Amino acid sequence: MKSGVYQFLVGCFAAIGSFLFGYDLGVIAEVVASDSFKTLFLQNNGDTRSGTVVALFTGGCFCGAFLASYSDPLGRRGTILMACCIFVVGGIIQTAGVVIAMLYVGRLIAGLGVGFLTMIIPIYQAELSHRKIRGKITSLQQLFNAIGQIFATWIGYGCYMTWAGTGDSREWRIPLACQIVPALFLGGLIFLFPESPRWLCDHDRAEEGLRTLAKLHAHGDVNDPYVIAEYELIQSQIAEEHSQKKIGYIDLFKGWPNLRRTILVMAIQASCQMTGVSAIQYFSPQIFAQIGISTGESLLFQGVTAIFAFLGTAVCILTIDSVGRRPLEIYGCLFLCITFIINAAIIKVFPATAPSTGAHWAFVVLTWLFNFVFFWTSGPLSWSIPAELFGTAMRLKGVSWGAMTSFAFNTMIGQVTPIAVSSIGWQYYIVFIVCNLGNSIFFWAFLPETKGLNLEDMNELFRDHPTFVPRSHWVPSSHIDEDALVYAKREKAMESGKTAADVLQLERAN
Image 1 (tube, rainbow, N blue to C red):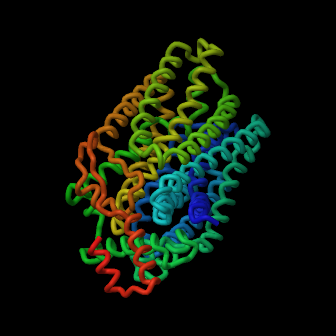
Image 2 (image 1 turned 180 degrees about the vertical axis):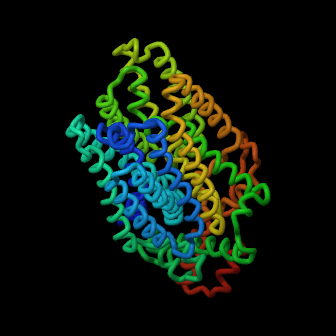
Image 3 (image 1 turned 30 degrees about the vertical axis):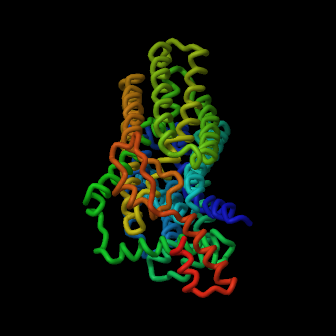
């Protein structure tokens, strides 16, 4: 099996954790819209309660992302196993819910597990990947998120069509129960896959780290020139980090290189939520109802929306390592801004009191296009880029801080959206129009390109690359491919009978 294929398959397995996140994102729209759920839990203060059911999940994610920054002693695989166990407990409590408090607690616990998973998985994927395909592999996080949404929306739609109007709680219990299965699968098999070689090298298990690198990149050949060059680059950075004091959260804000990375990570994650995607995912029936689309139709449309999300992420995987990160973020946000402008106008001109079939379809198609472009651009990149930006010592805390930002904004959107849609309707879209335009300008000005760089190049990038990015011509000083070529020539010379001194003299002469 080719090394790239092996890395891709390992990345796919790890991304099952993101499947859980996507499933929960997709399933809750059907759950809070189901007749049985409304009868049992939403008779009083329905908008507030439904918002709280959504927001407690993302609030749990926030706490999980924070706690994950202290999970380094467990390793990447151990953290994934622990997160799966937490998620299963939360899923069981939700499924068995008989009072609203059980839903609240179950959502909070499940969110805690997802917070661990969504933070650790892109780190695990990035640390396993070859730099030339790292974008593809870390984008699997969002691809499986989209697959989770597809499963959730169609399972939810099937249950809605089967039990709608009957008062049968299976209408929402079955969709909630289904999420437990992939969590058991991921947790049960994670130790069959390799640990992060960078984590191993960072924890005095360098030989095991070298063997893992060889397994990932050279079919187990520890003498492969590329493996040796990357291993030495990793060891060099870790040795430098170990010579310094222990890293804490406060170090994310010390010195402009670290502060700059922290600002970027927070901006990337916040901007992703402020595109408006979470509002659409969580409350599509309420949003579609603004132009007269029924709950059943909106759930059907949401199922198609999830398919567009999957297609968009697939396109991202194909293009991210060739097109780069910057263009996708800049032009993606511009397109999302345009879709919100048009849809806001449609809702204003054709409200539910003055329905129009043409307006309905225009709104739905633009929502599908919105999801396609979001999952091609901002969605995958919001997890791929943060996992790249920090060195080994700061990676957990840096990515954790970004994930916490994401879930904080996600929680706010989940709590505010049902109230805002009911109160101000189409005017709520103005928030996302302004934010998408601002996102595009910010990324054009301040987001450096990380395509093709080694993870170990990032410290140099943020030390030497100008803050205002356009027209910069910065290149890294490390050249791992050239280093690998030197090792290969050295090995060939030694095989021809030359001594180490002869080889060194030849290298100096050249």
